[in-house]
Amino acid sequence: MKLNSIVLRSAALLLFSSATIAVADEGNDLASALTSGKTGINVRARYEGVDKDNALKDANALTARLRLNYRTGKWQGWSAFAEYDHVFHVLRDFNAGGGTTPAKDGVYQTVADPKGSDLNQLYLDYAVSDDWKLRIGRQRVLLDNQRFVGGVGWRQNEQTYDAFAVSSSAISKTALTYAYVGQVRRIFGQTSAAGKMNVDTHLLNAKVTINDSWSVTPYFYLIDNQDAAVTSTSTFGARLAGNVIVGEGKIGLVAELATQSDAGNNPASYDADYSHLSALWSMDNGLSLGLAFESLGTDSANFQSFRTPLATLHAFQGWADMFLSTPGNGIDDFFATVKFKAGKWNLTGVYHDFSAETGSFDYGTELDVSAGTKISKNYGLLFKGAFFSTDSLSYVDTNKFWIMFTANY
Image (spheres, helix red, strand yellow):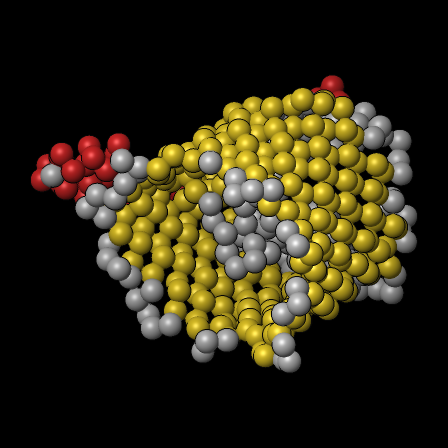
């Protein structure tokens, strides 16, 4: 029996044994908790157009996601949550990726939103005390800014994890999170071979509050991927975040460093580094200005670069998704951000300059823009565009555009 199966089943047995004992004591209260929960409904409809300077046809995708969920009431420290998604294809001129639309693979550009149903989340929570919480089942695992571990929430079918997670605030000024992951449920869905990864993964993250303005978060992520050995990695790092008051506003500052090496069954041997520095000045008039630098390094002697297989990649290195895999020479990303709140609209512009971390050549530049608003309490609208201009033969000019409507009940 695999280690991940042993760990998850043992944790489940422990939790459900405790639940069985409690049921014998207060069965009526359990029934009330099961029926007095909260139901959620979300609808997200999106048009995505992709135009790349290559031989493939432009993608025109109109998709919609219906999400239904239910959270039970609490009983004896226990609660449960279930979430179901179904993704519809309305305009189908695109390759959904992961082998889910074989007739369009190699014909159309990719929009990674396969159709179909998915049990997105199903987990059981147990509050051991005010300071200790346990969760077992299929769940979101979102750590820090999701640069290393996230949910890929931009895609219609998000990434979730079959995991056992512990969160604790027992140590003063510290929010501790540990998760053991046995399987990663990827965005391509369970009908695709690319839709899941079997892993033996340990995720440890501890956010320590220094004062009202500053925190430091050391972390250690050990990924042993049974299905994609080249992504088996050991990553150790720390993130310092805080803000300082400047004039009629404040500057948010982030400094982060990490180092990574091969782990588990990885056939390669390498060491690579990660660094991030950013400053965002948010003013009281609704204007924010930011400058940042992010670098994913490479071990040039072994031809291996820093990897982020569990990240929410769309949020980093440009919305055109040109660098979902780190280039062999690594990547340096210098970018500037402008945000402005105009009435009910939130406007954002980001300009990126991409170059190799090792070597003296450029990959290209990208301009990202978005405009979003809440139409009312329950409805939202977003316009978004990404325009990548290449300086390298390894990439092509790429334009992407989105219109998205959301409804929440």
